Image (tube, rainbow, N blue to C red; front, top):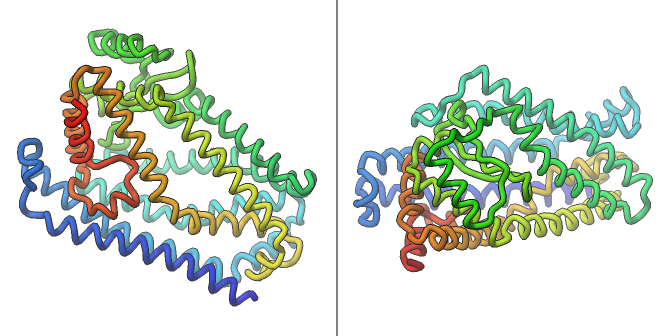
Length: 415
């Protein structure tokens, strides 16, 4: 049984890696086919130099991703099949006991150890790949400080939550997973409300958008669309990257509109207004609430699956763990869940792209024209060195946003 289960798990990990590698290869060949000559569709909006740079950036990321995915697959395969996890859990139990606190600590330590294994890849992506194409603006000191803060935050939030879930599994009866679902949902809601006030300022500086024509234009847009917001703030994203974004946090009168400072620098007033109208469109179309509802349903399914694994002692015994080791079920669930849910990625991407189209249409309607949003999308695509010619299957599988050509086509037709 042990060999069969491990072989099945390793097969699933390998299947995901092969699928990801195949999609990456497909996209690489497609990009290379269109390299060298600027496609007709972009000749009035993109210079040959920018297009060539975006091609090289895409190919560099593709190569990096293919190496990283095999590294992660091999690492996970070794962790699952080497007997390292049962051995370290046995040592940890002999040393610290089997209390809820000890089991929670073990799960957190495994998570931290696996996270450390990914640090070299994150560092290379930031200081070699992004640096090579002029997109990195962070320093070594700030990058490592961010990692330290992230680790501390993970432990402060993760340890109590893991302890609570283990406690519920032991003490709350057969329906403990329902209580676990409720507890996690409450924690997520609290983080959604508190993150803009407590967590995000720990990493970034937020300043009110200065008085002036831009601020008045954006506030007028918010009033016209009845989008209640407490303030418009600018985030110092430029101290880490040249990539840009905009988002809003909170609900009702506690809602804040946040613009990256890079976005403010890159776009005109009308283009910034169009981007904000797009974000307002997500709220007005109920996308945020719908996504939260689906997330809660997914969470419920995950909690039920975890509860089933807790009862299936044969499952974690098949990986070499001793009978009654509750934390083993939690650990294996955490390690393998992503391998299973990976195959649902295209559905999530399709759903997200549909919402992006709807938000685009809302923005064009509010603005009374589509040119401002099209101009913003073109500039953002240029500044972010976006892949302008992804393979259709690759973008269908991964892309949460439609491609630039797809978005422009829809906006022009709607106009």
